[in-house]
Length: 592
Image 1 (cartoon, rainbow, N blue to C red):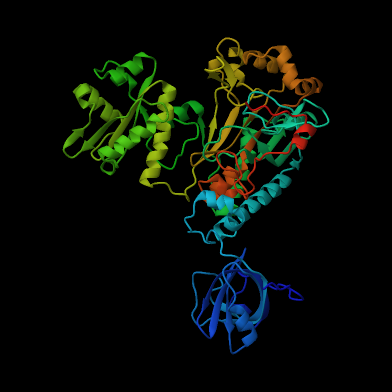
Image 2 (image 1 turned 90 degrees about the horizontal axis):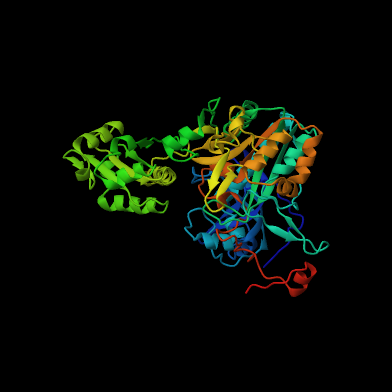
């Protein structure tokens, strides 16, 4: 049975009605959340994006309407006309719990088969099923609330940008492939056989050209694309809040973005972030937390004990120091009793995934020291380690010894894993930090050369420019990341606006002048005609919304996301295309 709305027009949303509406005749439309037939009464919970309202069908009011209501099932689409009345048995769990609608007219606008997933937040269905039936998953209140917040965040950003004299300007989606980033998605050109566009990994070059164009303040909420091996919370297509400003330095960019962050958290979560947001150098972040995106909601900081154990009998420690590595540890303070030997073995398996060869440990108990490595350390060495790490009864000390990068990767990630396992993270506690003074370069083992840590247009710290050719590993960048609760929400830099300095940067990266002009000639040409000092920042918009909605899964804040293998379970993309389409695009497939 399917009926048209006819002359019925919705007067209210399901979640809007309150006790003050009692006596009004209303028309509601929505989906059936559930139905309960009590014989002479049928109760239906009707749902839309605003919430749920209880509808009552009484066989003494209209036998025709009642008989039709008996056919109603979960997820049927209904239009109901009736009168608002006060409920006898009130439901304090929903905003409309004081009232109900006594139905006078019912139209079944569409029927539904039994859904393959339940339309409720605690259905425990697999993510694969959720993505395959995403249009059903999106009916859930939690999913709709996240997308509603996503919309609100975008609106707040646009309002803030307009108030601060930024212009929203679109940049091309079909653009030119450029190096020094992730792998590009390529698009064949039908009208230019054998040539390809690339989908933008970011609008980086175009927004710099907008500054050359005199736009002064630009922003864009923009789709970006990266064809990379996906890890957790990465998507092949994602949304970025892109910002660029002229005649600025680091403090200018940070200042206005702090105001934006303050506005978003106050308006969306009711949290007033203390300004100015603290800053921490990249070097300090690595030394204390092992990562450049530290979660400051808990302790468990890294402690360097290399100087204490450099001559220790324990070869694992001694050899690491001799090979110019380090030995560092974490005091899991007060939680020693929470970890059995089996639990510690599990932690060891975890750090091995980051390149560590093992995990040494010391547990301080009422009975004394428990540790498989204690016999290889002198009493003085052991006591000095415990003193430096502020060890007390009830503590668990864990150590990794290796090259610095392995130690940082292992302990930095272990620190976060410990907090998750101990369930000590508070989603309502917001701890932002600016990480500044990043290295300008990082060494690429595979290419055997320095590559840009951010991108080749990042301006060096003024006092480090003289080191570009002689000691590039010591050059710091005018770069900054905003990190909130262990997630990098955004990052940016002051850009190079001087052609000579840009040339030095390219040479430091191993580009010949010909290669630089081949890849970036249109930008370098523009730089000849008066370029203002400029800089900006780009936020991972999806990650920002994740933080504002207290979810750890990026797919929860994207309407139609991809899997970690970059596939769409809903549409089965990517898929084969016809020979005719391949021929038109001048593509000959040879996959053998």
